[in-house]
Length: 364
Image 1: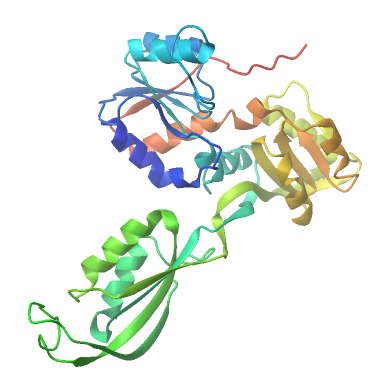
Image 2: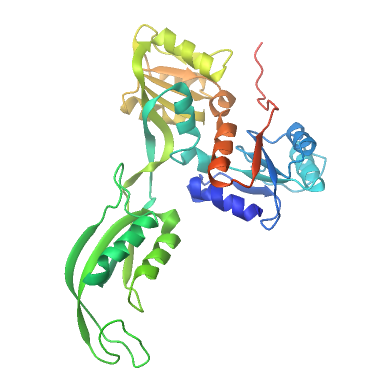
Protein backbone atom coordinates (compact mmCIF):
# COMPACT_ATOMS: atom_id res chain seq x y z
CA UNK A 1 0.00 0.00 0.00
CA UNK A 2 1.05 3.61 -0.42
CA UNK A 3 2.46 5.32 2.65
CA UNK A 4 -0.17 8.06 2.38
CA UNK A 5 -2.94 5.42 2.45
CA UNK A 6 -1.52 3.94 5.64
CA UNK A 7 -1.32 7.40 7.20
CA UNK A 8 -4.94 8.10 6.22
CA UNK A 9 -6.03 4.88 7.95
CA UNK A 10 -4.23 5.83 11.15
CA UNK A 11 -5.59 9.37 10.83
CA UNK A 12 -9.13 8.01 10.80
CA UNK A 13 -8.42 6.21 14.10
CA UNK A 14 -6.36 8.99 15.74
CA UNK A 15 -6.68 12.22 13.69
CA UNK A 16 -3.34 14.00 13.31
CA UNK A 17 -5.15 17.29 13.96
CA UNK A 18 -5.52 16.15 17.60
CA UNK A 19 -1.77 16.36 18.18
CA UNK A 20 -0.47 19.06 20.50
CA UNK A 21 0.99 22.25 19.01
CA UNK A 22 4.54 21.32 20.09
CA UNK A 23 4.35 17.86 18.51
CA UNK A 24 5.67 16.48 15.23
CA UNK A 25 3.53 13.43 14.48
CA UNK A 26 3.41 12.17 10.92
CA UNK A 27 6.07 11.37 8.33
CA UNK A 28 9.61 11.75 9.66
CA UNK A 29 11.39 10.11 6.73
CA UNK A 30 9.93 9.01 3.38
CA UNK A 31 7.56 9.97 0.58
CA UNK A 32 3.74 9.75 0.78
CA UNK A 33 3.82 8.04 -2.62
CA UNK A 34 6.19 5.28 -1.50
CA UNK A 35 4.91 1.68 -1.53
CA UNK A 36 5.26 0.02 1.86
CA UNK A 37 4.72 -3.67 2.56
CA UNK A 38 6.03 -4.50 6.02
CA UNK A 39 6.45 -2.38 9.14
CA UNK A 40 8.07 -2.44 12.56
CA UNK A 41 6.30 -0.89 15.56
CA UNK A 42 8.42 0.72 18.28
CA UNK A 43 8.25 3.33 21.00
CA UNK A 44 11.44 5.18 20.03
CA UNK A 45 13.53 5.14 16.86
CA UNK A 46 17.12 4.18 17.59
CA UNK A 47 19.89 2.91 15.32
CA UNK A 48 19.27 -0.56 16.78
CA UNK A 49 15.62 -0.33 15.67
CA UNK A 50 16.67 0.68 12.14
CA UNK A 51 19.04 -2.31 12.00
CA UNK A 52 16.24 -4.57 13.24
CA UNK A 53 13.95 -3.23 10.52
CA UNK A 54 16.60 -4.04 7.90
CA UNK A 55 17.10 -7.57 9.24
CA UNK A 56 13.35 -8.22 9.16
CA UNK A 57 12.91 -6.77 5.64
CA UNK A 58 10.72 -3.91 6.87
CA UNK A 59 10.40 -0.81 4.72
CA UNK A 60 8.58 1.19 7.40
CA UNK A 61 9.19 2.02 11.06
CA UNK A 62 6.11 3.12 12.98
CA UNK A 63 7.10 4.86 16.22
CA UNK A 64 5.24 6.54 19.05
CA UNK A 65 7.84 9.20 19.83
CA UNK A 66 8.85 11.38 16.85
CA UNK A 67 12.42 10.94 15.64
CA UNK A 68 12.56 14.61 14.62
CA UNK A 69 11.41 16.75 17.54
CA UNK A 70 13.74 19.71 17.33
CA UNK A 71 15.01 21.64 14.32
CA UNK A 72 17.79 20.01 12.30
CA UNK A 73 20.49 22.03 10.53
CA UNK A 74 21.97 19.03 8.77
CA UNK A 75 21.47 15.32 8.19
CA UNK A 76 24.81 13.61 8.73
CA UNK A 77 26.62 11.25 11.02
CA UNK A 78 27.57 14.13 13.28
CA UNK A 79 24.49 13.60 15.48
CA UNK A 80 22.55 10.50 16.61
CA UNK A 81 19.35 11.72 14.93
CA UNK A 82 21.18 12.59 11.72
CA UNK A 83 22.84 9.18 11.65
CA UNK A 84 19.48 7.42 12.05
CA UNK A 85 17.87 9.51 9.29
CA UNK A 86 20.85 8.95 6.98
CA UNK A 87 20.77 5.17 7.53
CA UNK A 88 16.97 4.98 7.09
CA UNK A 89 17.13 6.85 3.77
CA UNK A 90 20.06 4.76 2.55
CA UNK A 91 18.13 1.58 3.46
CA UNK A 92 14.85 2.72 1.87
CA UNK A 93 13.02 2.72 5.21
CA UNK A 94 10.27 5.26 5.87
CA UNK A 95 9.60 6.47 9.41
CA UNK A 96 6.18 7.62 10.67
CA UNK A 97 5.34 8.73 14.21
CA UNK A 98 2.00 8.60 16.02
CA UNK A 99 2.51 10.63 19.17
CA UNK A 100 0.08 12.99 20.91
CA UNK A 101 -2.65 12.34 18.35
CA UNK A 102 -2.62 8.74 19.59
CA UNK A 103 -2.37 9.98 23.20
CA UNK A 104 -5.44 12.21 22.77
CA UNK A 105 -7.62 9.77 20.82
CA UNK A 106 -10.31 8.07 22.92
CA UNK A 107 -9.23 4.54 22.01
CA UNK A 108 -5.57 5.50 22.07
CA UNK A 109 -2.61 5.05 24.39
CA UNK A 110 -4.44 5.72 27.66
CA UNK A 111 -7.46 3.56 26.86
CA UNK A 112 -5.08 0.71 26.02
CA UNK A 113 -3.15 1.25 29.27
CA UNK A 114 -6.35 1.32 31.30
CA UNK A 115 -7.51 -1.89 29.70
CA UNK A 116 -4.19 -3.57 30.57
CA UNK A 117 -4.61 -2.59 34.22
CA UNK A 118 -8.17 -3.88 34.22
CA UNK A 119 -10.12 -0.63 34.54
CA UNK A 120 -13.80 -0.41 33.62
CA UNK A 121 -15.92 2.55 32.48
CA UNK A 122 -12.98 4.46 31.02
CA UNK A 123 -13.55 8.11 30.09
CA UNK A 124 -11.38 11.08 29.18
CA UNK A 125 -9.86 12.80 32.23
CA UNK A 126 -9.37 16.22 30.57
CA UNK A 127 -11.65 16.52 27.52
CA UNK A 128 -10.45 18.62 24.60
CA UNK A 129 -11.93 22.07 24.01
CA UNK A 130 -12.37 23.88 20.71
CA UNK A 131 -12.89 20.62 18.82
CA UNK A 132 -16.63 20.75 18.24
CA UNK A 133 -18.52 22.65 15.55
CA UNK A 134 -22.22 23.03 14.89
CA UNK A 135 -23.71 22.57 11.43
CA UNK A 136 -27.05 24.13 10.50
CA UNK A 137 -28.59 23.35 7.13
CA UNK A 138 -31.97 23.77 5.47
CA UNK A 139 -33.71 21.40 3.06
CA UNK A 140 -37.20 20.46 1.83
CA UNK A 141 -39.20 18.61 4.46
CA UNK A 142 -39.48 15.66 2.06
CA UNK A 143 -35.67 15.15 2.06
CA UNK A 144 -34.87 15.98 5.69
CA UNK A 145 -34.61 12.34 6.76
CA UNK A 146 -32.20 11.51 3.93
CA UNK A 147 -29.96 14.48 4.73
CA UNK A 148 -29.95 13.69 8.47
CA UNK A 149 -28.95 10.09 7.84
CA UNK A 150 -26.12 11.23 5.54
CA UNK A 151 -24.80 13.54 8.27
CA UNK A 152 -24.94 10.78 10.88
CA UNK A 153 -23.17 8.29 8.59
CA UNK A 154 -20.39 10.82 8.13
CA UNK A 155 -19.86 10.96 11.91
CA UNK A 156 -21.93 13.98 12.97
CA UNK A 157 -24.37 13.94 15.86
CA UNK A 158 -22.35 12.23 18.62
CA UNK A 159 -22.84 13.48 22.18
CA UNK A 160 -21.27 11.27 24.85
CA UNK A 161 -22.84 7.80 24.68
CA UNK A 162 -25.52 8.98 22.24
CA UNK A 163 -25.44 9.18 18.46
CA UNK A 164 -27.81 10.49 15.76
CA UNK A 165 -28.32 13.68 17.80
CA UNK A 166 -29.93 16.64 16.03
CA UNK A 167 -32.47 19.42 16.47
CA UNK A 168 -35.08 19.94 13.76
CA UNK A 169 -37.54 22.75 13.12
CA UNK A 170 -39.93 23.33 10.22
CA UNK A 171 -40.24 26.72 8.58
CA UNK A 172 -40.43 28.47 5.23
CA UNK A 173 -37.46 29.21 3.03
CA UNK A 174 -37.33 31.52 0.04
CA UNK A 175 -35.07 31.76 -3.00
CA UNK A 176 -34.98 32.92 -6.59
CA UNK A 177 -32.59 31.34 -9.03
CA UNK A 178 -31.06 33.10 -12.01
CA UNK A 179 -32.02 32.22 -15.58
CA UNK A 180 -29.01 29.88 -15.63
CA UNK A 181 -30.08 28.01 -12.50
CA UNK A 182 -31.69 24.59 -12.37
CA UNK A 183 -33.80 24.65 -9.18
CA UNK A 184 -35.01 21.43 -7.56
CA UNK A 185 -38.36 23.10 -6.97
CA UNK A 186 -39.83 26.32 -8.35
CA UNK A 187 -38.84 27.97 -11.60
CA UNK A 188 -35.71 29.83 -12.68
CA UNK A 189 -36.09 33.59 -12.38
CA UNK A 190 -39.13 33.37 -10.07
CA UNK A 191 -39.30 33.93 -6.31
CA UNK A 192 -40.21 30.67 -4.62
CA UNK A 193 -41.26 29.77 -1.07
CA UNK A 194 -40.66 26.22 0.15
CA UNK A 195 -41.58 24.34 3.31
CA UNK A 196 -38.18 23.45 4.72
CA UNK A 197 -36.67 21.78 7.76
CA UNK A 198 -33.81 23.34 9.70
CA UNK A 199 -31.39 20.62 10.83
CA UNK A 200 -28.81 21.29 13.54
CA UNK A 201 -26.12 18.84 14.59
CA UNK A 202 -22.54 18.82 15.88
CA UNK A 203 -19.29 17.26 14.73
CA UNK A 204 -15.55 17.37 15.58
CA UNK A 205 -13.66 19.74 13.28
CA UNK A 206 -11.42 17.05 11.84
CA UNK A 207 -14.31 15.38 9.96
CA UNK A 208 -15.72 18.62 8.54
CA UNK A 209 -14.81 17.86 4.93
CA UNK A 210 -16.45 14.43 5.12
CA UNK A 211 -19.59 15.81 6.81
CA UNK A 212 -20.06 18.61 4.26
CA UNK A 213 -19.44 16.29 1.33
CA UNK A 214 -21.93 13.73 2.64
CA UNK A 215 -24.56 16.40 3.27
CA UNK A 216 -24.23 17.84 -0.24
CA UNK A 217 -24.47 14.39 -1.81
CA UNK A 218 -27.79 13.74 -0.08
CA UNK A 219 -29.22 17.25 -0.48
CA UNK A 220 -31.57 17.89 -3.42
CA UNK A 221 -30.76 21.58 -3.86
CA UNK A 222 -28.37 22.82 -6.52
CA UNK A 223 -26.95 25.30 -4.01
CA UNK A 224 -26.97 23.99 -0.42
CA UNK A 225 -27.46 26.60 2.31
CA UNK A 226 -25.64 25.81 5.54
CA UNK A 227 -23.87 27.52 8.45
CA UNK A 228 -20.95 26.27 10.58
CA UNK A 229 -20.33 27.65 14.07
CA UNK A 230 -17.34 27.00 16.38
CA UNK A 231 -18.32 25.73 19.85
CA UNK A 232 -16.58 26.04 23.22
CA UNK A 233 -18.14 22.82 24.52
CA UNK A 234 -15.84 20.09 25.79
CA UNK A 235 -15.44 17.07 23.51
CA UNK A 236 -15.43 13.95 25.66
CA UNK A 237 -14.22 11.65 22.89
CA UNK A 238 -10.74 13.15 22.81
CA UNK A 239 -8.35 14.67 25.33
CA UNK A 240 -5.63 14.00 27.87
CA UNK A 241 -5.55 11.10 30.31
CA UNK A 242 -8.34 8.76 31.36
CA UNK A 243 -10.16 7.68 34.48
CA UNK A 244 -11.97 4.46 35.24
CA UNK A 245 -12.68 2.10 38.09
CA UNK A 246 -11.53 -1.30 39.28
CA UNK A 247 -14.14 -4.03 39.32
CA UNK A 248 -13.50 -4.40 43.04
CA UNK A 249 -11.78 -2.01 45.42
CA UNK A 250 -8.40 -3.22 46.67
CA UNK A 251 -5.89 -2.26 49.32
CA UNK A 252 -3.40 0.38 48.24
CA UNK A 253 -0.46 -2.00 48.71
CA UNK A 254 -2.19 -4.65 46.60
CA UNK A 255 -2.87 -2.02 43.95
CA UNK A 256 0.82 -1.08 43.82
CA UNK A 257 1.68 -4.76 43.43
CA UNK A 258 -0.83 -4.98 40.57
CA UNK A 259 0.75 -2.02 38.75
CA UNK A 260 4.24 -3.48 39.12
CA UNK A 261 3.03 -6.80 37.73
CA UNK A 262 1.01 -5.41 34.80
CA UNK A 263 3.63 -2.86 33.72
CA UNK A 264 6.71 -4.86 34.58
CA UNK A 265 8.08 -1.89 36.51
CA UNK A 266 11.11 -2.86 38.64
CA UNK A 267 10.33 -0.02 41.04
CA UNK A 268 7.48 2.43 41.67
CA UNK A 269 7.81 5.92 43.11
CA UNK A 270 4.71 7.10 44.92
CA UNK A 271 3.34 9.51 47.49
CA UNK A 272 0.23 9.32 49.62
CA UNK A 273 -1.11 6.88 52.19
CA UNK A 274 -1.05 3.13 51.54
CA UNK A 275 -3.55 2.37 54.29
CA UNK A 276 -6.69 3.11 52.29
CA UNK A 277 -8.43 1.32 49.43
CA UNK A 278 -8.29 2.03 45.68
CA UNK A 279 -11.33 1.99 43.41
CA UNK A 280 -11.25 4.97 41.03
CA UNK A 281 -8.02 5.21 39.04
CA UNK A 282 -6.79 8.01 36.76
CA UNK A 283 -3.87 7.53 34.40
CA UNK A 284 -1.82 9.14 31.67
CA UNK A 285 0.89 7.34 29.72
CA UNK A 286 4.24 9.14 29.53
CA UNK A 287 4.56 12.54 31.20
CA UNK A 288 1.17 13.28 32.73
CA UNK A 289 1.89 15.12 35.97
CA UNK A 290 0.12 18.18 34.53
CA UNK A 291 -3.14 16.25 35.04
CA UNK A 292 -2.71 15.76 38.80
CA UNK A 293 -5.27 18.45 39.68
CA UNK A 294 -7.73 16.97 37.18
CA UNK A 295 -7.31 13.56 38.79
CA UNK A 296 -8.05 15.07 42.23
CA UNK A 297 -11.13 16.90 40.91
CA UNK A 298 -12.35 13.63 39.43
CA UNK A 299 -12.00 12.09 42.92
CA UNK A 300 -9.49 9.48 41.81
CA UNK A 301 -8.08 7.31 44.58
CA UNK A 302 -4.88 6.88 42.56
CA UNK A 303 -3.20 8.54 39.58
CA UNK A 304 -0.63 6.65 37.51
CA UNK A 305 1.79 8.35 35.12
CA UNK A 306 5.53 8.92 34.62
CA UNK A 307 8.20 11.62 34.93
CA UNK A 308 6.84 13.09 38.18
CA UNK A 309 9.16 15.70 39.70
CA UNK A 310 10.07 15.83 43.36
CA UNK A 311 7.93 18.85 44.28
CA UNK A 312 4.93 17.49 42.36
CA UNK A 313 4.69 14.63 44.82
CA UNK A 314 3.68 17.20 47.48
CA UNK A 315 0.62 18.35 45.50
CA UNK A 316 -1.72 15.53 46.49
CA UNK A 317 -0.98 15.29 50.21
CA UNK A 318 -2.51 12.07 51.49
CA UNK A 319 -5.77 12.40 49.59
CA UNK A 320 -4.65 10.47 46.50
CA UNK A 321 -2.01 7.89 45.70
CA UNK A 322 0.30 9.49 43.14
CA UNK A 323 2.29 6.80 41.31
CA UNK A 324 5.25 7.27 38.99
CA UNK A 325 5.51 3.97 37.11
CA UNK A 326 7.92 5.26 34.47
CA UNK A 327 7.55 6.97 31.10
CA UNK A 328 8.49 3.92 29.05
CA UNK A 329 6.56 1.52 31.24
CA UNK A 330 3.28 3.42 30.93
CA UNK A 331 3.61 3.71 27.13
CA UNK A 332 5.10 0.32 26.27
CA UNK A 333 1.77 -1.14 25.12
CA UNK A 334 1.50 1.46 22.36
CA UNK A 335 3.33 -0.99 20.08
CA UNK A 336 0.56 -3.53 20.60
CA UNK A 337 -2.05 -0.84 19.98
CA UNK A 338 -0.48 0.02 16.61
CA UNK A 339 -0.62 -3.65 15.60
CA UNK A 340 -4.29 -3.84 16.67
CA UNK A 341 -5.14 -0.83 14.50
CA UNK A 342 -3.37 -2.36 11.50
CA UNK A 343 -5.21 -5.66 11.91
CA UNK A 344 -8.56 -3.85 12.01
CA UNK A 345 -7.99 -1.38 9.19
CA UNK A 346 -5.14 -2.63 6.96
CA UNK A 347 -5.44 -6.34 6.26
CA UNK A 348 -2.87 -6.20 3.44
CA UNK A 349 -0.08 -4.74 5.57
CA UNK A 350 2.12 -6.64 8.02
CA UNK A 351 3.25 -4.86 11.20
CA UNK A 352 5.75 -6.51 13.56
CA UNK A 353 6.57 -5.48 17.13
CA UNK A 354 10.14 -4.38 17.72
CA UNK A 355 12.12 -6.54 20.12
CA UNK A 356 14.52 -3.69 20.96
CA UNK A 357 14.07 -2.19 24.42
CA UNK A 358 14.54 1.53 23.79
CA UNK A 359 14.02 2.59 27.41
CA UNK A 360 17.03 4.82 28.20
CA UNK A 361 16.39 4.49 31.95
CA UNK A 362 18.20 1.68 33.77
CA UNK A 363 17.55 0.48 37.32
CA UNK A 364 20.36 -0.67 39.63
